[in-house]
Amino acid sequence: MLIALIAKDKPDSLDVRQENRPAHVEYLKATNVAQAGPLLDENGDMCGSLVILDLHDMAAARDWVANDPYGKAGLFASTELIAWNKVI
Image 1 (tube, rainbow, N blue to C red):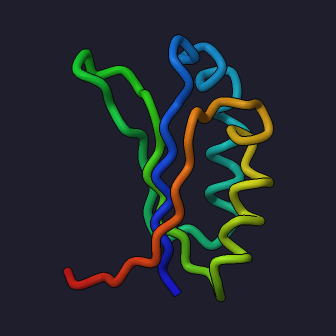
Image 2 (cartoon, rainbow, N blue to C red):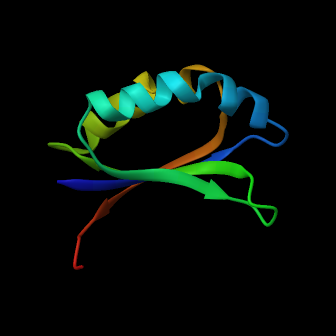
């Protein structure tokens, strides 16, 4: 099952993102991630994340988010998990 995670950072938290980025990238590489990348603001600065997870169910996706180093660092103001169907 493909699940899109859309996570938006708390305001003025670019330093938290940058400090935790190496651990987050390692987590992406070590888990069932189909695609991932940062969301960008109008200045081109990272302000959130879009991650396509390939997991069994929504409960596994919630567990993935709970164990993400960004989530553990309190980076996100909001997270949304949505089932996704790849067409192209």
